[in-house]
Image (cartoon, rainbow, N blue to C red; front, side):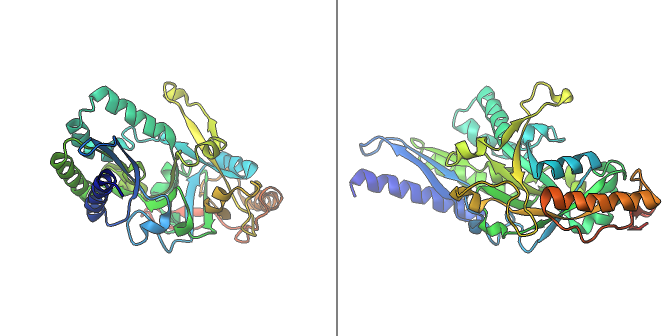
Length: 346
């Protein structure tokens, strides 16, 4: 090892140790570059871990959770069944106009210190939102949550789709699974202070941190009623071409100036096999595997009596035909939300 190699390796390790001390998980150390002579500037970038196993025991991996709920309309339910897939929309599609910015702005002083102007910072945020994709769900404990049915279940006329997680999220790569944290920026503030300390002590070096995945699990407290659980991915450099195969353009009239797109994540059948065949490409071994395990209906679902139960029987048969799944919990009664917010089966 040359003196220059030693100098660069030492700088990389000191940077990683300082950042990991505040985050309590191991980062991926990437983008170590610099000129060949001693004392020349070094560029270092720390990345969020590719593998969820490196996030065990942290708030950024939801463990011991086998099922989640997705409240939506009956129309979206049929779209999911017909495609045999979930759509992870990019952050431009979020109902929170400050999505991602809330946590990212906590680190803005670092970008200011490094000379990143407002225009470049704003462009960076827009690019992150364009390339970051989420699927929003919540805990199965919220099946009887009146606010969820009202806001996300088409005002009680929709459905709650129960999704079973087939493979252990700790084995996923480049897909992240966590509860959203509301107004919990203590760790990010500590990260900022450590990052600034290292940068000030080594002003000739450039220290970058690609922690978009982490920042995307933090939101303002004003959104805590969502009690959101997220599946998140960002278009990664290592698998850029593969991710592009799964990304489709979309359009929203109320967001006509935004590049809306979604990542199409195939669902699994009863045997845990992807409904869509991928062949033997290695990265698919690390994809999330989810399947629909039940469907619940809101109290105002627009069918009742024999019609409603006949509809469910037909839906069960359709799910077998299109997705190869058995919905043994159907037919069932509707969920009725009472005035005090407690729900029951109607």
